[in-house]
Image 1 (cartoon, one colour):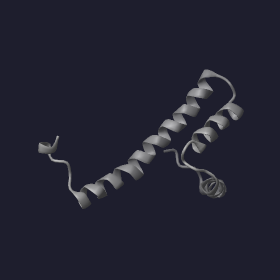
Image 2: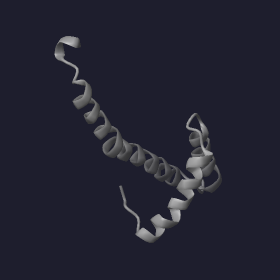
Image 3: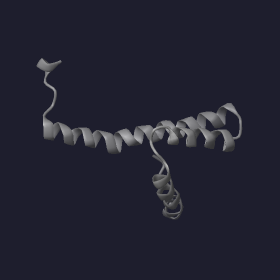
Image 4: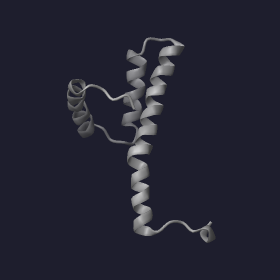
Length: 86
């Protein structure tokens, strides 16, 4: 993840807080990201690829830093799936 400077992070955190109280995660985020791309990404193959690349890297970061530790914790709490169960 390309970490951004603290000043920029502080600025964007206000927007994140607003979004967190305004969005439901049953399509709102999808709409928001699509609309952002449609309205603000200058049409070109390269620009669309960059936008999609940002989304893909966000997915990878969520998996790596949030989902994997969560799953590891649940394995400890509930036990791993055994070969016999598969």
